[in-house]
Length: 281
Image (cartoon, rainbow, N blue to C red; front, side, top):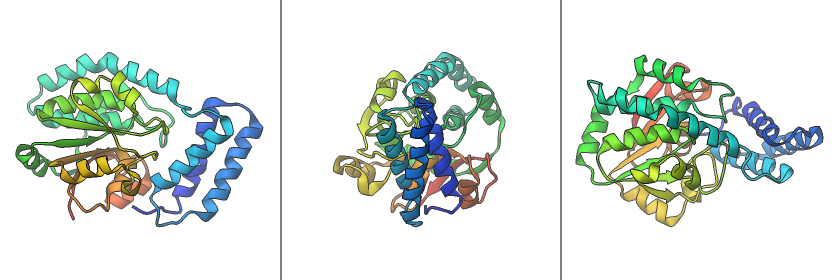
């Protein structure tokens, strides 16, 4: 997925938001915006937004000296979602279609995105998404591939959301490798966050090697690329991973909520839609 003009003000907003997470120094915040503005002048519009996002958060880190601006809020989100985990398990257990309900819950967790949204209510959003119709639902294709596969690669997105992913991984009932970010970037799930979410209990944790807010295949490790190409089923969570993988040359199932008009227009759905989309090549 390429970068659109409307992505540019979003980069500036993300830079300011991330900077304010760790400093109130107006001079530093101005420097972050100045450097982000200079960077934006030279970016290729053919690059994915996730690639540009990498540079935005590198600027924030360099100016503030803080490598993980969202560390405390990630911990808060993991704690909050873990507190409702037992209730989520009950919802799945009592549903007519356990797998589809677990998919809904995993997508509900995708609202925890500090790169796009400033405010959200976890409990309210879960309830709404459990009743929301899918804008794209390639469920039959998903079930077919799941039945046939022996190996699943599950590409994680945000911390806190990772607790919701645990619900779905348990319902897949197949060996799963869960992919984390190589370094802290926005509130994306790292190895440390995945461990805190209990994902090591239901999957093998794998470092993608990517330092971007989304999988960029030409930045990934050879080990990850081997898994990506050889796994029978690839599940990709969230907008950042969609941006990076929407043009890849293998089958991928995208699970996400379309949280901005760029993504919704690209998919041909309304903003706020929930998606289970099979990508083929």
